[in-house]
Image 1 (cartoon, rainbow, N blue to C red):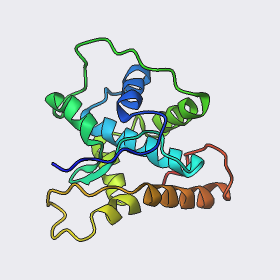
Image 2 (cartoon, rainbow, N blue to C red):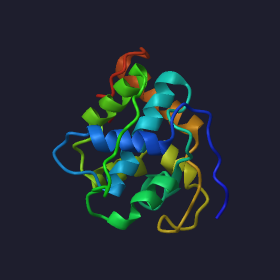
Image 3 (cartoon, rainbow, N blue to C red):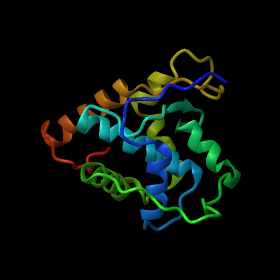
Image 4 (cartoon, rainbow, N blue to C red):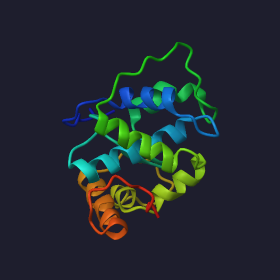
Length: 174
């Protein structure tokens, strides 16, 4: 397995995933698939608003959409079932900007079922670009979803939906 690069960011994906698992109050419990997509949207929208990543870990374009491999491995024992950690999680305190963004992502995407989130990411340029060059869409792949692609794609959506403003509103998610 190749060494994954770490991005210059304040948090790790592990810290953000713990925060999500403790603070999510949606209709359905979070599975590993859903957590992966929520992490992706947190990273993508944070890049669009702040021009820097929220967390240090690389996102890869796996068969079922964007994945942070370290988080996938941490929770893979739950398979398609809801994540129910054996030990209590004590999340770190996020800075206001980061917490507001993660809360907004949970508000917009948290009640979307995991397979719909997967389908959404499969239709977005960052995932499509990361999987260019593979023979079959069903092939195993560890290609990186590039921060630049996420930033540019979600900035373009901001421009379309908010007239290019900085308002932290994800309601135009498409």
